[in-house]
Length: 491
Picture 1 (cartoon, rainbow, N blue to C red):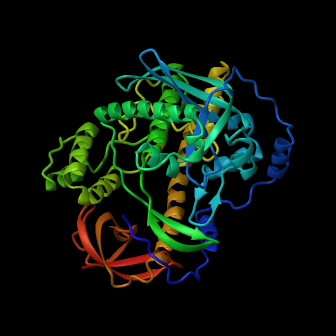
Picture 2: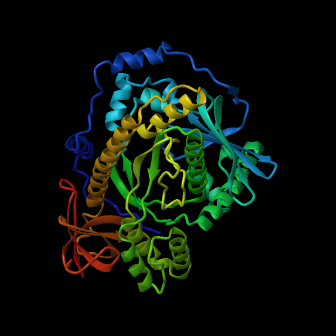
């Protein structure tokens, strides 16, 4: 486990750097004309009432998220059913509040997402909505779009459906409290301890997601399980740097969100409705992945095969846990990032998601913070109401392209801010040696990620002949938070 790194300096203005990075990548810091008036009208109740099909406020819904999360997009509930476990995932009905083509929607369409930096979040929608009126906050009545499905004993999805409903979150929970309890090495938090119903709910959801995960792994879904650097910040200043630990509560929610996103994509495909898909293409550098596997006495087929790759990774995690993080990181980089694409209603074989081994997958579970999800929600609502599509195929294609561009821009901002935080955190460690893995070889330089703490920098000496996935020992030679520089030399 990563030891905390105490800061030796805290004079750099991270908040100003975050704003400058956003401006450099052409993100807008101010909302367009008319946004304030639209927001005021929404908060005053001068928007069209929401019509719902069902009243599900009496169910024991709950949410699990980060300690600091306030934009709650989804809540969940489960019950026993013939042949398995019936799951309902309620997604905040943001489309009922933010009108298509309105000033707030146009801003969201341009930004495409909420951007998270070390010291400040830049929301896609105003906080008054994303953490208020359109957030599924505890003990508040909210309109939602519900995806419902049965998880069979074999871990497959059945009886998939979507509908609108009124819901109420009975318990806002956190990963850090629920995860250790589910894993058996901590007591339940006060909310869980006070409710036998909630305790049974969480165990039932865990049972369902265990089955889902095992089936996805059999299908070839990749399970990397790696940590990320997390700054500990107080009053805008870095206090320490630690490493996130992926726990069972995080996995539970991830599994339910994947199943919900699969259900949305499946139902749109079934209704022959065009929409946005989230895909990961077959790796272009598969041969390099094959070569890396061979270095670890593994054998992969000559053409991309996610099931074979997952079997190899699972075996490696068990056989060599100390070096697994190096290998997983290299393969993640070689597979490449996800992207949005248009899935036409008349396309019999939409593109799938290589890493999830899913043929039907769409982002739909975070409409408060991802524009693609808000677009998908509008498409779904038009399908449910048997109305014409809210977007043409050309419009959807343009939105997908814009979201992909903004994804790259946002990753630049977030990477830069993570490196600035790490540069401050590591400022007292010049000359220290680290174990790392090569993560990128570009015309800008060769990049290495050290594993403890998990941060990335440039290899300024000794990079000749190295490729993605190569293990190296490096020495930290320089940090500069102003320019987001973390420089290493090969030892």
